[in-house]
Image (cartoon, rainbow, N blue to C red; front, side, top):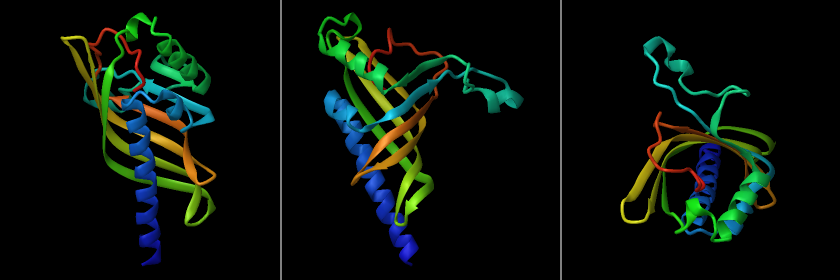
Length: 179
C-alpha cells in the first residue's frame, strides 16, 4: 500500500513540474523556463518517415548521425531565446502564441536516489502544441515525448527530451518556437 501511495505522490509531483514547465513556455516566460533545464540537457525532435508496415519500427530517424528537426543543448536553446528576445528575429516577429497540452503522462522508470525520491525519472506523455501567428498562421504539432528528469534540490530538471511528432511533413513556415 505504501509503494502505491509513493508512486501516486511521485506521479503527482512529476506531472505538476511538467505542467508548470509547459505553462512557462506558453506564457513566454523563457528565462524561467531555462531554469527547468539541466546544464547538460539534450533536446531532440526526430524526423518521421512514412514507411510500409514491416518497416514501421524504424519510421523515426533516431540514430546519432540521423537528421532531426532539433538536436540541441541548453546553450543553443538559450541563444535561440536571446535571439527571440531581440524582437528582430523575423521568424518570431510578431511572436508566436502557443498553447501546450499534455496528457496520458506515465512514469516509465526511476533510477537511483533514496526512495521515495529517485535521482532520475523517465516519463512518457502525449502532447499537442498549438501555434498561432498572424491572421491565417495556425498550426499544431502533436505526438508523444519521452523526458528524462533529474532531481535537483527540491524539484526536477529536464535532462533529456525526445520528441516524436506524428507529422512526417510540417506545414508551418518555420520551427522557431520551442516545442
